[in-house]
Length: 415
Ligand SMILES: [Zn+2]
Image (cartoon, rainbow, N blue to C red; front, side):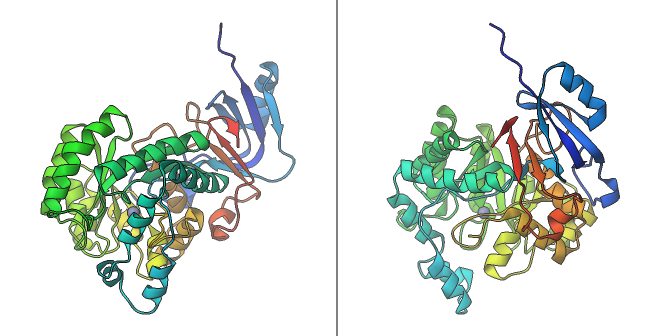
């Protein structure tokens, strides 16, 4: 039997901002943005079949019997948002950390006194796989409502072979309870767990020897991340770990230069997909990143959560680097999880153009995840489309995240 073909025609849309035909790297001016006025988008199953002027496509849509989604008020369409960095698989809260930070304790002091990541590890280990999956799906569905149709999710609160497996299986299970695409990443190299008897390198060896093969055999993730920082792992500690990961075919990702430099160089040495954080990066790191294929990822939610400076996004773009923007949604430093708000605020502080902000949460974020089938509105791309109730696309960042999409399509299905 032939598979039924479902056509859907959406429009007329006041402005469709396609994000198509734009460079992966470097600064972008709003004038470079392709805006289709009075647009129509014809979907064929889960893909965009055609996008262009509404009245040009209308006759074809009618003749093939497309389901008509007639828009009677003002809308701006853009590609579904991609959040390329989250830690939404967790249990518990870190309100205590927040209070301690505001009382003057530093992130590193809190970590050393037993709070910080270890607190989330304790809570997450107590939760069942099913409970974790449920919490993850709930957060993913909140994101989806905000127009985020692809969500990266890291492990890293298990920190033993069994507990990391529980987290990654929970992320996989959560994927069945949300229409959003969840892209899992193994962050067993978040910190060395306090209950591990051995040093950093012994812990990493155990993880790479015992966990990596299972990740492959169960197809739980093809991405391996590590936190390179004074309180976590040094550039030297991580060498063998990343070498093993690469040999097994994993993509590499690095939490880099958050408080001290060093991580971004590791990211580039291993040809990482992305180097995330970079708040502490200096001119030297910026120049090297600009000359690499590693995508810098700014995490303004962490800057807002910790009360520290933002990633030097303007300098990175001006140097010729790419720039993706992620929420870093996590219970410690970035509990808000509102990516559009955070990206807009980053734009204000770093003097980014509207297009640079929107590129950072669409095709550039997709590229950070190695995905080329989403992030722009053009034929052949996944039909991940969000509609904001406005006639001017600039309202999206201008309203700093308060303007939410009122319609979301994921893989051609209205959610
Ligand atoms: Zn993170």
